[in-house]
Length: 270
Image (tube, rainbow, N blue to C red; front, side, top):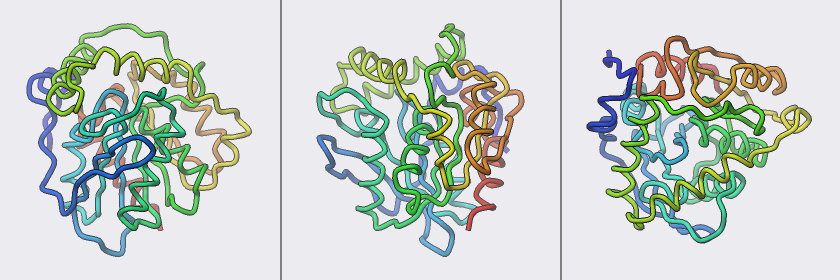
């Protein structure tokens, strides 16, 4: 059982636990970016699992989840979004559709025909867009902590938890990025996307044809609960899951609780 890190003080100090040794890792060149990925575990009968991190973060933020999923018998792929972590980007503005195409390029390179997508924050939005673009490639989406239209976001209010997370992001960016001195420009570019995208209508949500779980934390700092509930109502067959006692950073705060939610979702996929 993992201990709790509700205020993210431990995360700020040391980061998440390191990812396990990968079976395969490297970079894939796609559409102006060099995309870093890592794959862990053994390929088997279960659908592979792809973890997509949140904005300003990187794959290492899944340090509590990857070992648990591998131990449960899953083949797990992590991807650093363009411009995040060890991945690079070109000068174009960030767009969720572009990042969804990046994920698809990694799937193609790894010969993964169909995967389960676990998305956290920006990674959740990217996951759902990819599911809409290529439903034949997506067995299901675990959508945690994101909005699909700007009115789903709360006004930003700084908190000690957010400050601790941001502190870690600064350190990791300087350590991992190919452009370690451009953090401020990176934040501005990602924030611009987050403020203006996505803009999905109820009609677009109703076209989703893969299993989706909308997971919302009880104390999410960024996403309105009523928006998450709206997503669950608007996506055909979507399941709703409330994660109690945690915030937008549940995978780091109470990983055992979050991992149980992931396993419950994955157990339903065929």
